[in-house]
Amino acid sequence: MLTKTPHLFDDATRVAAGDSRWSGHTSEDYWAFVGPFGGVTAATMLRAIMEHPQRSGDPLALTVNFCAPIAQGAFDLDVRLIKANRSTQHWSVELTQGGADVATFATAVFAARRPSWSHQPAAFPQAPPFETVRPYPKNSLKMSWVRQYDFRFVEGEPQLGGAPHLEPASAFSKLWIGDSRPRPVDVLSLMSMSDAFFGRIFHVRNEFVPFGTVSLTTYFHADTEDLATEDISHVLAIADAKIFHKSFGDQSGELWSPNGRLLATTTQIAYFKA
Amino acid sequence: MLTKTPHLFDDATRVAAGDSRWSGHTSEDYWAFVGPFGGVTAATMLRAIMEHPQRSGDPLALTVNFCAPIAQGAFDLDVRLIKANRSTQHWSVELTQGGADVATFATAVFAARRPSWSHQPAAFPQAPPFETVRPYPKNSLKMSWVRQYDFRFVEGEPQLGGAPHLEPASAFSKLWIGDSRPRPVDVLSLMSMSDAFFGRIFHVRNEFVPFGTVSLTTYFHADTEDLATEDISHVLAIADAKIFHKSFGDQSGELWSPNGRLLATTTQIAYFKA
Image 1: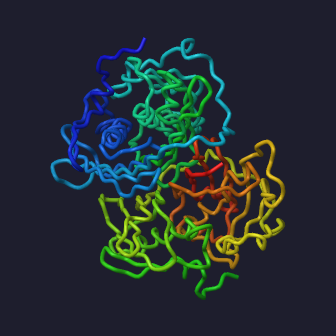
Image 2 (image 1 turned 90 degrees about the vertical axis):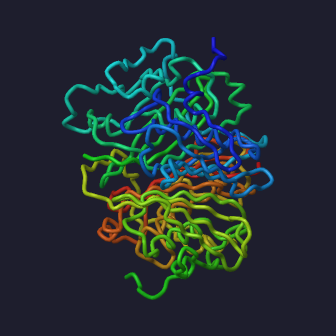
Image 3 (image 1 turned 135 degrees about the vertical axis):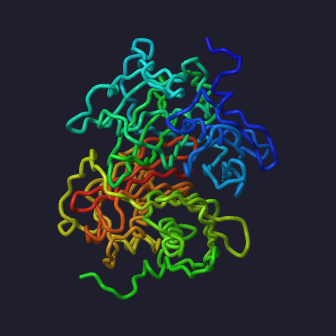
C-alpha cells in the first residue's frame, strides 16, 4: 500500500550533509501563512540530526523556538552535538538564511532506549476507524501544507467560514492525521504531525486571527523499532488548550497509534492577535 | 507576613553579572539525589536572563535540558541573546563547570505581553484551602530541597517507605506548594516549583528507583504584573503522567493561583531504571 518512491514530505525535509554546517530549502508544498509550515521546519531540523554521522539513538525530546520568519529559499543548519553520555546525546540546531540572525533554534535529546518496566496510564481516545471517517475538506484553505495531510475529525471539526462564535467554543479536537499520500509514520513525520493541529484559537473563536507558534516541544514515546512494529500510516490525535492570555495561548496534544500505543506528546505556546 | 530579608531560594539562585559570562554556585539547601535540585538550576538560569541588561519583557517559555550531573561548587553561565524582535526575545544559557562540557542547557523565550482577549478553558482544580491541609512530613527524606518546600497533598500523597505497589497506582497528584519559609511567588519560584513534583514513577510504584529529569519545559501564563496582582505565596498544583516506556516517562503539570488563575503549565521527560 505504501509507496517507496520519493514522498513530498521527504523532498520538503531534505538536508545536505556538511560537517557541522548543513543546508536545506523551504518547500512550496508545505507553506503556511507567512512562511514554511512549522512542523516541516521542525522535522527538517530533526532530520539533520538523524542523518548526522555522530548521531546515536532515537529522538526523545525536541524543542523548537521559532525566532523569526523563514523566507522562501535556501537555509543553513548549524548542527552541534552539545554533550554525549553513554546512552544520551544533547544536540542544538540553528537555522539561518544568508548569514542573518537565527530564524529557528532547536534543542534535542536523543537516547538509546533500553528495555524497562512499561506502563501507559493515559487512556486511548476512542474513535471510529480511520477508514470510516470523512476526510476534512481542504479546498477552501489556501495554505499548501494543509493539503499534504488527510485530516479526519472525530470531534471538534472547525467550521471556518461561518460566523465567529459569540461565546468561546471548546478548544478540544480529536482527529485522525495521515499524509495525504500515505507514508509510513516515522519519527520525522511524527515530529511534523505534532505541529499539524489547527491553532486552538481558530477552534475557540471560529475565525482566523494572526497566529504563530513561538515554541514547540515534542516528546517521543516510541523509538524507531517501536514505530517499525506499529507499521502505520496515520495517527489518532487529540489537542486541547488551557489558556489564552495577553496575546499568547497554549496547546497540548497526543499522537496515538491506531493500535492503542501512545507515540508522542506535544505542547506549544503560540502568539495570537485578538 | 512575607519577610524582606534574604530567602534561601534567593541565595540558592544568586548569579554574578558578567558580559555574556555569568557565574553561580550550587546550594546545599537545594540538593537532590546526586546534584542540585533541577528546579533551582532552572530558576538560576532564568535569573541570569532576568538580570541581564539586554533583557526586556517577561518569560514566556523555558526549556532546560539536563545533560550531565552538576558537581557541588561554582559554575559558569554563558548567556546569549539569540534573536530579538520588537516584542519577543530568544535566549540560550549554557551551564559549565571548570571549562568542561555543557552540564545544563536552556533556551528561553521572553515577551512583552500585550493586553488581548482572554479565555481560560482549563478548570481550576477544586481543593480545600492551603491552611486547612496537613503539611507533608519530610523528616524521613534526606534530600535537602524537599525541606525548602511546604507540600500539602490533596490527592495522591506518596506513602513512600511502605511496600512497593503490586499494581501501578495513579500517577496523579494534587497539592499545594509553597516555600517552607513563605516567599512571594514570582517567575523564578514558579520556574522552580514547576519541577518540584516528586517523580511520577515514585507515586506509581511507591518506591524510589534511579530517576532523573532529562528535559523540562515550562510555559508562563502570567507576567510580572499579573503575579504582583495575585500577591500569593503558594500555588495549587497538579501533576500526572501518560506513559513509562523503555526507560523514560513523562510528566505534565499545572500551577494555579489560589484565586483561580492558571499561572504556568509544565511538561518533562525523565529517565528511570525499573
